[in-house]
Image (tube, rainbow, N blue to C red):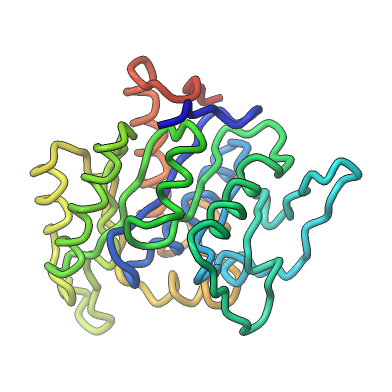
Amino acid sequence: MPQRQPIPGVKNLIAVASGKGGVGKTTVAVNLALALAKLGHKVGLLDADVYGPNVPIMLGSTQEPMATAQQRIIPVEAQGVKMISMGLLNPGDKPVIWRGPMLHSVITQFLRSVEWGQLDFLVIDLPPGTGDVQLTLIQTVAVTGAVVVTTPSTVALADVRKAIEMFRQVNVEVLGVVENMSTFACPHCGKPVDIFGHGEGAKTAIEYGVPVLGEIEIDPRIRLGGDTGKPVAAQGETAPAAQSLYKVAKAVTARLEEIGATLGGPQVEID
């Protein structure tokens, strides 16, 4: 494997991954980035899910990135976060129908040709699964750690194990597991309803010896925030439905500080 280099100016590179689609990985990535920014950090968000680049929709941005005279890409500023996405370069309903080498080229360009400046965190929203984009990322740059998102359902957990194993095989630290859609509070009686089950993500994390970074409830406000370009985390830590997302953000920073001395990636510094 070639030498993995850090991105100049980026202190911590966090990959947000999932074993399968539909578990809310992009929702977690976007709200994690916004929560970190609201907590006072300099944050970038790279949408590497080239087949389903939904980050611009969730951040409410259609602005096209600019280029410098040196062919460097200037990321878009959206809600206090620097962002780049195929959704800004290929807007509308036209699908991205690419083979591996083309994916490798665009991901490498996003990593190496974007003027990220000085960042405390660069959050990367990966496509679901364990394919070409994940391998390009892991082989190209020094990833500080990975956050694996799952739901409590057995089907999702079968795939999250593969995601954890993938990162372990390529020596990327798994920061922990986030159990999304963990429980639902009945609007009538307030009692929790376990629509997809509950706690199974924690059991899987314990089985693999990685922490649980948090459980995010099923809340229509989280879904509505993403659909309308106004994610709940952007409204601050005390906003309804945002508390669990901020808990995840704080758990990520605590985990990075905890493992900083043993990581082989970029220098872990959290201002």
